[in-house]
Length: 139
Figure 1 (cartoon, one colour):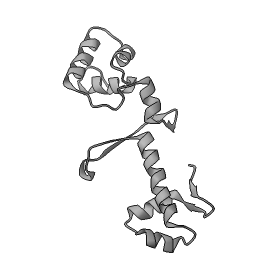
Figure 2 (cartoon, helix red, strand yellow):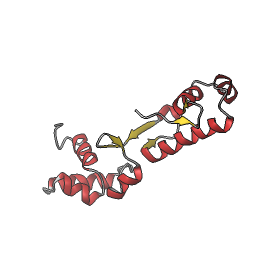
Figure 3 (tube, one colour):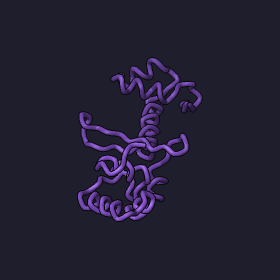
Figure 4 (tube, helix red, strand yellow):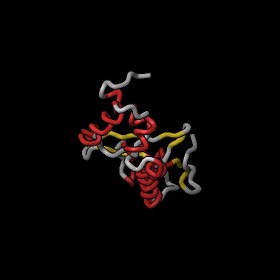
């Protein structure tokens, strides 16, 4: 796995983020890594925010009910923007009308691929939903 190093300090962004997550203050982090400036720590958090914002879909609005979905394609993270270019409704919450439409399309003989195109969702999400409703079996 590639590591992101801060400037010429040899300190990894992940090390800084781990310390932040463990409750260390910025001052304590700088004490441990004297080559760092407070701005370096802030930039580490910004890098993490950008990665999470482009590659992870977070559901829920509090830490006790937090869910993260990671998007992979061919063994690598795929940005949500990339995914939503192909499937505009990717990661949007399903509603009752859409569920009913899914079931109706499936029962009318449409293929999973056709349904995915019609509903602007990924094939995987259509299969998962059909499985949830007991219309297909896990493969």
